[in-house]
Image: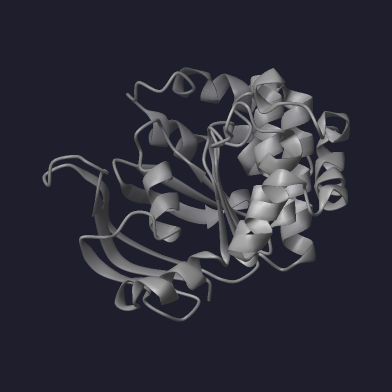
Length: 270
């Protein structure tokens, strides 16, 4: 089991104690599973990813990751456990003046010594590996470009290339497709899924593209107000369940859910 959460509650980072990002959430995720998180803005998708990544500490409940409670370990042991994860935020933390090759190789930092990391900043120690990681995203020609010369979509795919460099056993990915057109979005999603499948890694991905989630993920978790509304196989999720999840929300995507369901031909499910 990669993750086991039992009655977890967590506050928003920096928010008042009365403001909960997650409420009494129970969830288990097996190694190698591929799961999509959906729900309106503010539903708790990012907070759940950060909780799984040990970046947000629960205020109540129990959590296990790879068979251990990370918050009962000392800081060094918890750091080693975090190295088995790859957390990709919606906006990749890429220094603007950094070269793409160094930005991608940052995915290997948990496995490198301090000396290797410093040496690679001066002269990339594995430029060929960065090149190969960029190839599935059609970014290999940007290897030595500066990050601030990339478009928003290119920066997002550069962040995803880091995952291929890492040795992570679990990918926690937050809105990886928000800056991509439909063709690039599907291509990027397939690269992540194939990489996770090949190394039997867990993939948990938050998405606003509901139909993309339904067509390509075997399991979908619907979140709202920090609670799990449903956790089911994608084939068992109806249009009515989706409409109820987004009902009366302020999410811009909510109003188009029914239209998408009627207008978009479903893609093959994995």
